[in-house]
Image 1 (spheres, one colour):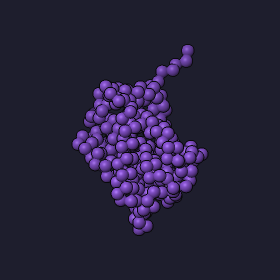
Image 2 (tube, rainbow, N blue to C red):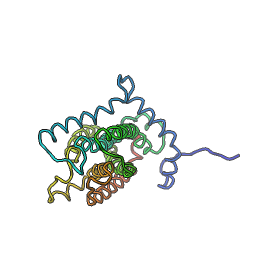
Image 3 (spheres, one colour):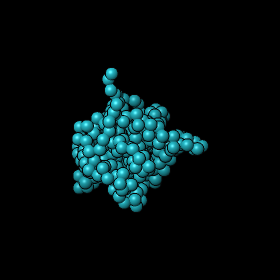
Image 4 (cartoon, rainbow, N blue to C red):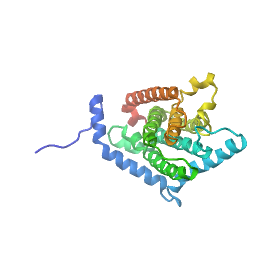
Length: 275
């Protein structure tokens, strides 16, 4: 009789580690469903709160930047769509980053009792961010015709730019999640970083407004290319895509992901003892 028992042991090689991680995919799914259920449990409006965040930001930013500051739009997009298309990928990043960072501490009891690839926990914690992102994209598709923005085949490339946002948040989140296990007060830094990142990312303005001398530094922010890519995709290529920012985003996201995975895997064996 064929033996289908899965054996998970600490100290395995990297190749075996990834096979073990794949073997725990059902656990990842269960944790993801649990996180979604907990997030919206006993909430009167449920997932409707997901729609309020980008919509309120769109109205506030449109009033401040377009009506008061008189900032120009980009690529013929109405200013409200420019803000909404920038806010949606930012919601994906700003939601997934804190969730990944706090995922290990939030599952301390599970880590202390059972051995499994700990990477399963941060992966499962992305569920809420991905769900909110999908809802917000559906909202964008509904709102676009109301502002006279036509659909184009370039919309199909939205998942590519979303992947860059996830890579950046996972890489940075794994690094911070590891530090959060050792230093619990580190979680208080995350809201400040997310808040500062909102103003350093072109959510409420066009990247074209950044002075030339600051653009190289500006492009090191991986979310710049993600936001520009979203606007380029929904405008059918009319909104300018700064390819230098895309190269910077790919490089930065790749470095963050590699460093985050390395530091996480290096410290993983000590989680159960410290947490």
